[in-house]
Amino acid sequence: MTLQIRNPFDGEVFAELPRDNPRSIESKLEGACRAQGEWRRLSVAERASRVTSALELLRTESEDVAREISLQMGKPLAQARGEIGAMFDRAGYMAGIAEATLAAEPQPSPAGYEWRIEHEPLGVVFNLGAWNYPLLIPINVIVPALCSGNAVLLKHSAITPLCGERFARAFEALGCPGILAHVVTGHEECAQLIGDERIDHVAFTGSVEGGRAVHRAAAGRFIDVGLELGGKDPAYVAPDSDLGFSVPNVVEGACYNAGQSCCAVERAYVHESLYQDFLGRAEAALGDFIPGDPLQEGTTLGPMAQRKSIEFLEEQVKDAVERGARLIRGGKPLDGVFFEPTLLADVPQDANVMQEESFGPILPVRSVASDDEALEMMNDSRFGLTASVWTADRERAERLVGELEAGTIYVNRCDYLEPCLPWTGIKESGRGSTLSSYGFVGLTRRKSVHIRSGM
Image (cartoon, rainbow, N blue to C red; front, side, top):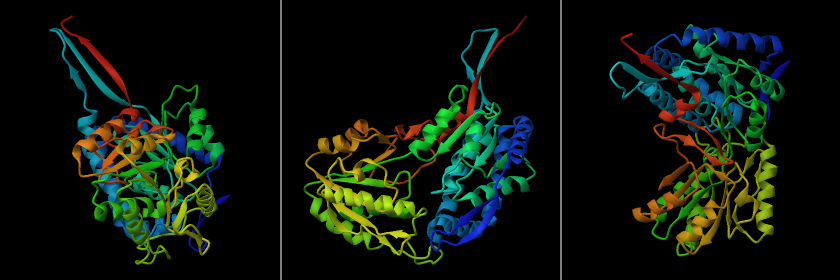
């Protein structure tokens, strides 16, 4: 059997991959276990060096990789190139801090004793990657997992499996067979793998429902799972905000990658003194997104990666309008594959578009009378991935930072990951962390070493 890969722009099948069968899955898992036994004996510095060298193959093929991303999930070519650059930034940072982060930690001890804490690899890490950032999301796990001495079994999304193949070939070419293998398989086989005693950790990025399924499959095995799930990320435009700066940034945060970003701006609260001006500027800014063939250089808005998303976005707009919201711009499908950049005003807090992840180019906005009202509305969510505050007042910013319920709080920025900061969510946005030194914690176990000398 094969997996057909369709171009979301024209619907055509442009590539096929053979699906793994039980025998090939077993072979890849066994290969990962064997490779990990040798890999863990290398120094951290050597592992980091080899990981960095392996990824250089992707750099030499970067234009082909960018084109494949656009063909698989519709990201405009310029944005796909940007993802490649960001991947190398993250990989370089994580490999660069690996040796210091994983170094043994001597502890104060009395004469005749030596106490230290070491960081041991877990074994085989099962990494289930998502399609919306098909290089960035897997690399958050791949680099720290491998630098820590683990092997990685990667299961990429069925929408973007060619990216998984690229990763696997990069490590094969370096002479590290089995240390990173890619499996092309379905949900049932994934659940079986999670239940296999040779899998030592699971990292998943995707929907809340998918995260629950992963968590259930791992239950009872006493292994940790890292989950990066949905978001409904709010922005607050305070009364002292410079709209010339905040509006284009908030709009881009909502519509970049056609809004298909875990940390996209999904709802905005604007102080009443700026509300009408914000709406006028936002309506104009949405006009800067140009839909078209993602392989064309002038395209800034690609097709939705999944056509079922278009119907869902239509329903969110309809629900909001029925509840009293005003549709200022957009709100409709375009050519059957795009969704128009959409601005909704006066959106009630209980509207579906204010509560459930859209994952599309929609910006729902409502007016607030104060910082306290904005804070209450922003925290009124089952999600907690990111939130952004747009203000020139540092005191206001710090107060809101302390009260907002999210894993990352931005001030005068949004929709960006800095690799020195942990990427983490609260509530139903997930558990665990990737990136930063904390990105190694869930991928290692602590070993206490207690030596008594002089015997």
